[in-house]
Length: 220
Image (cartoon, one colour):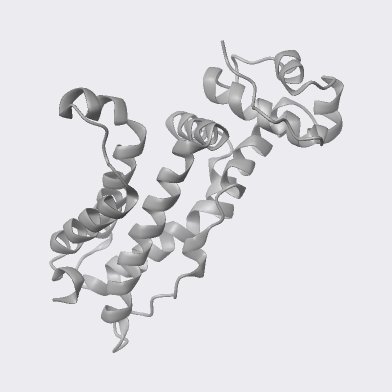
């Protein structure tokens, strides 16, 4: 049984998006029918075609809405210049610390919001199956995270090639994401909820990342 979103918005279009987010996250694209979505949204199923052009359009709108609930704060960070620039390393050092802090904050933000939690689960489904909307979503929402982190790593390790840079980026984001997406396994094995808060996780991941990159933590 999938619970309906609480406090459904007055706007029928948003009601459909929120209901679709919850149901698609729980059952996948093929496991949900438009009548079920409409019933949860307290709307007429014909409104799906009217507002979104059909089921695929509604699915894309649900994915996009998940990103829009978490504004892209990485886009607000300072751009990192070419590694040859005299200030590149200093800017990259601060940039990677800020990147990790914002990334962790956004990852853990959904834990207290059921709708945002469903949005995260829906995105994970799409990533896992390599869905048809990934390229569009990447260009619109995820590319700034990739570009900023890549530029930080390049400035701190200009001696690395593309492969080493990509490995480092995957390790940085993966180290943060594991605490969000498998907390139950961590709790079973560690006997406690983890991480206790975003600040302590950010400090640890930043220290770990800078050491792995061969940079003294906190600029020491």
